Image 1 (cartoon, rainbow, N blue to C red):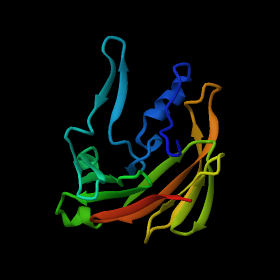
Image 2 (tube, one colour):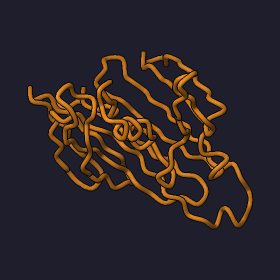
Image 3 (spheres, rainbow, N blue to C red):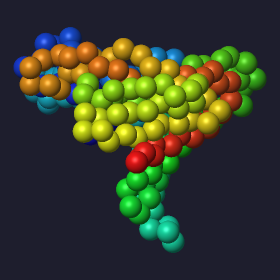
Length: 199
């Protein structure tokens, strides 16, 4: 309801369809503004995914408090930049709190490569009907038209609100906004965030 991927309707222009396939159009991380995979279209086979991603792992468990925990990783940035991306999402039992962790781990030990800084951006694409209010550098309130509010916080990181577009609406492309966490990394970075309902 609040956080969406941009998506696109079947009648969207090809340029918008291509843009919506990019990693940056989804609520995940990018490294150096690069997609983790490239998708092309074949008249015979339909959409074809090219490397990047060759290895994906995923586990799901429930802890003693009843929280549902999903952990997944992919190697879409390994060949280009030497990183594995792992995301963990934990939903508490009553659905009022989501804990997230985006771990970008260096898999190389080349001193020259480790001396290069890479930009990691974690994006949260927000539905056009949701109002965003910056509370402080580390937190943003997301407020729905019915008054329901959630707060996205990332302690130790600066959250910024940026312009976005929502391409999945039946009436066509609509302006929207996204929340971004941006940081530079030379080895590994651990971005922890929390989305919590406010009464």
